[in-house]
Image 1 (tube, rainbow, N blue to C red):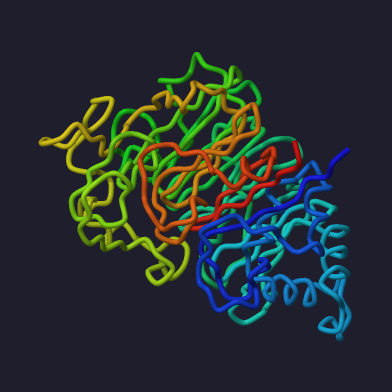
Image 2: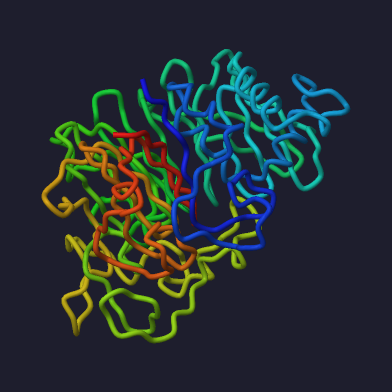
Length: 414
């Protein structure tokens, strides 16, 4: 059987495990095959895609965390080959999730650790979970969500900067099979295929038809009758794939990330439209400075309270007054890919989206400033577009995983 290989493209952070790690380029616009040393990531089906965060995370921070944890590496860890280090990671960790200066690790015993990468300290690092064990993590600007071995979802946080981390299950408890975090919101997928959302709703990312903040997970009633197979949070948009392989999407469409016509004024590098300069606050140079910071105040689209876009509305979507463009979808809408292809998997970046079809083709759309769409350019598009690289090289795409400005896939020969 032909093994999957990993391909990566988009924004290149310093110290990332990418094919172009030694290059001075800050972005890659076409898929690049990952180094052979980390090919093992495709050989652990349980966390096949989640472990791909290794590819676009700060590798040095991970090594420091493992060294401090004193589970794997010796004091001379820097003499180990990348292959040996990766083998150690595979054998001792069940999950890893990194966001800015924090790395979350779950070992094979279900114990969760939090490492501050800015000072390599493990103070108060073990997450208190009571008698339960964690096996899944996801994190964003505002929330970190964990999932226990008993499929109970909850938030990981602490009461003060010097306090320890605590896992707090949601009330009432929801039995989940998948969790996902955006910048300011979260999605939960229950074991019976229902989707719940919570957090900030200023751009319709919660899918409840209004822009209110939701403190506890709430069932998305618009898709209550549809059983979902998988979910994904973008920065301010959300997506889900149903059991019958329909793609549902909702939230912010500022960069065409929903796949519907976007507003093109004040924008450059847009395929098929006239171009004007675009200034974006969502870039590697404008990240928030830590979790729980009220970044909503920096967003000109939100009110001062951060709870509403303008005023509450029950419209299914918000359109620009002068054009037939969609600014927001406040409830989930079906998005048809070209050729009416069925979708097997979806993943959302900060402002771009990627979907894998049942027949192994990859489509991407949304913001492309860092080449994260994989079309060989830095253009933004609101049209789901097939990534031609995999077709030209006779490759079947099996999985996709997006970070903020990166895209990672596993693929194999047809």
